[in-house]
Image (cartoon, rainbow, N blue to C red):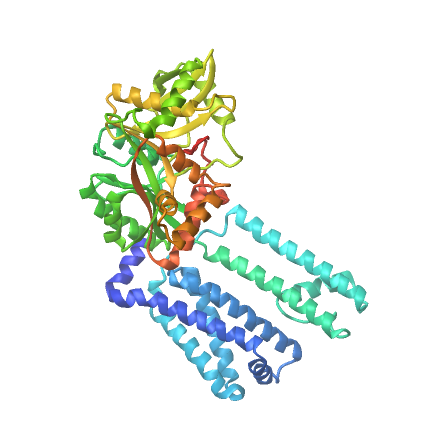
Length: 588
């Protein structure tokens, strides 16, 4: 039975309120029990009582029990997050650890007396919750048979043993014990689980350092293994390779309304998942990044069909223990997402939209663009525009080569507002426009279809040798030709935190607004924030806000990190998908 089937089974016999409370109770109990175990080892009074309670066993076993208690405390803290997300392996491991903890506290009760009552009660509560509501922990986790997982765990184990062997060998030189290499290797292996060996006994300080260093490496190795045991499934098992084909057919047959989202066409990226509503009249394009199910842009289809797709999206995330979130959604989808999952929102920037009918270069505010366009035209630069399907093969290959060579920086950024391919046969209606002078290409733009009467900017590249203002002139030419092709609107760049920048520039701005503005300008030294806003503002666009949505405040850091990873502002996970070929940002 899959996760969804198990969810239905446990839903039949448990009230909804109790179902929601069970993971939280288990997670809190697990954290409290882990904290008690750590205090037992760290706090001198509690540690001495633990040692006294185990006085009937050899000293080696006392040290092993102490190390086990410390390791169990750390692991219980790590398990709490998995329990809160209903993971099966977290349930099994927590059941084992809490059972051991309860038995140890019961045996030691004669010595610990009332100090053992709280951990015994917490252990008993956790055991009761785990056993009674075992069907509530139904979420599958990632497979442990992946080659990368095996290599990482094996490599870390070898590294830990190697470092431990070097440490023990150094200790042998300082305080010689006459041990062989094989005995030292055995001491390392035992030390990783907290058992002292024959190397101890002469220098107490050096012995303690080696003991706790090996124990620390052992606990770190255990935490890393626990991470792989509890990590979420990285890819949706229901994902189909034909999803992008179905999305493209959905867009081509005009199923998207005329006022569709300008990011709708980017759902055809190969590294996107697509969740269709049960009726097939709405879909959500999303990515899975570090356990976050990140929807991109607005849902596809009519707004009346959105609620069903949004509910199924949230249910899918819940069944797989993913955090549901939304990146770069528009104001139209804001309310729908808020109602579907009680999402909170944060404005992350604005999209620059141009109305082709009202666009003009007249007026004082358009002076810089008007002068740049005139200067480029006088320099002999000519603007060309073609559909991708109509491009000659040689020209297409030349433009594709230039797009790659002109890319700025070593990391390709862009996910929510980039297609990831250029002049591809799968995109016959994409618009390619370029500026050339005496046969030399100086700048390139690619637009993708936006509904029935719009273009959405995907790629913007410029040669380092291009005259100043070439990109501006090429955009103006594209907007003017768009009107002649029956295109009513053009979506330009996305300007991150535009409203914050403009608020901070006002004379009456407060201290917080000015501080925020200063931080954004500082970040603009490495990321295109202020430059994108200044560039797009030249064309007099209408600003359309975009939002990041998340289920709870505690999830915001993880959702933000996932979004930054998707956009390649943070290192991308290897299993996230192919690195995009193109990006939608100023200057390329």
